[in-house]
Image (cartoon, rainbow, N blue to C red; front, side):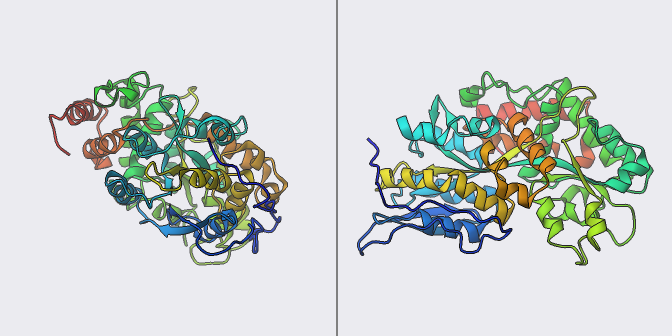
Amino acid sequence: MQHRSSGRRREIAITTSLVLAGTMLAACGGDGGKPTLNWYINPDGQETLNQIAEDCSTDEYDIEIQLLPASATDQRTQLARRLAAGDDSTDLMSLDPVFVPEFANAGWLEPFDGELADQVLDDDVLAGAAETVQWNDEVVAAPQWSNTQLLWYRKSLAEAAGLDMEQPVTWDQVIDAAADNGGTVGVQANKYEAYVVWINALIKGAGGNILDPDTVEDGRDAEVTIDSEAGAAAASVIQKLAESEAAQSDFTTSNEGTSLGQMYPEEGPGEFMTNWTFVYKNYEGQIGEPSGPADEAEFDDLGYTRYPQTVEGEESKPPIGGITIGVGAYSKNLEFAQEAAVCATSAEAQTALAVNEGLMPSRQSVYDSPELNDAYPEDLLTLFSESIETGGPRPKSAYYSQVSSAVQNRWHSPNSVDPETTPEESAEFLSAVLSGEALL
């Protein structure tokens, strides 16, 4: 039975300022001797997360922030080592959604039950976010913020290319438009997780999957389905960009940060770029800076639309990312830790993260809030929430780290991707890795 404290936490108050300095998620203090809950966070949004930790502390426990490495892979490694050793000081952890199945399957996450599960996953939570925190019919983590990718672009470049951005656009159209008009296409194609994000979105956008969704929870026995028409369609897009004049010079090592640089180049018309929700606030904060828009007019030339279609006429499946909060199964303070997780993922906390840090909510009510509508254009908020609601998550496998590494192994370099051979070769290798017949 979850212990519920009363009268210990004052109501969270959110201001409408872009920077919620002094955000009042305040909690009552208490005497010494209280337990301290360790919350391991990734580096995104540290200032606001520290405020949330302080404000979600109560007269019965304090929450202390512990910083994880920047890389999602390194974050997983550090937490997995602790939990595999039965560490009882890992109370709360910020988890990339793709690692939730692995941690839950290993018994490292304490599921939310009853009333708490209903609070964590009520009808306000967007479907794409809700899907990431369930495993074997249990709620094993709480969605805190959600991420998705859009197609960002210079309006003037799209206009010169004759593209109607009010209608869905395909990858073929975007690549051709950029190449024919002196622009580029920014993606994430280095040998790391974001490249798999791109590959997965391309495959799902063509109606396929890396692993069969009906067998993915079978773990090592999941059916590998990357060798398909959808896999070939995805490979064709990558091959086309690799061979196009629209490919950026760092194509094979590109990442989320390097992709930003060609939107406002010193010379040239700019770019089309697939990237996460942080892009808008990033450029807004760089007006007048060397790497950003020269002035408000150039910032207003920034356009955004739904993720491109892999196959014309088939709805795209934008990537789903973000952060969920898991409670360590070996924590000495399970009840307090789960209560703290509910507070840290509340609508008020999500509002603070979105307005302060550009980390978008998992809850629809926050998108509808006055605070977010003061901070973002209404159509952009709608696009974010719709993309999260209807997007395509990566394979929900307890062996996702092996799946990701195997795909990277055969699809990188993007310059060597071939629709005739890459899907088949990657399917054979991934099957061998899952069955233990091959090593990464």
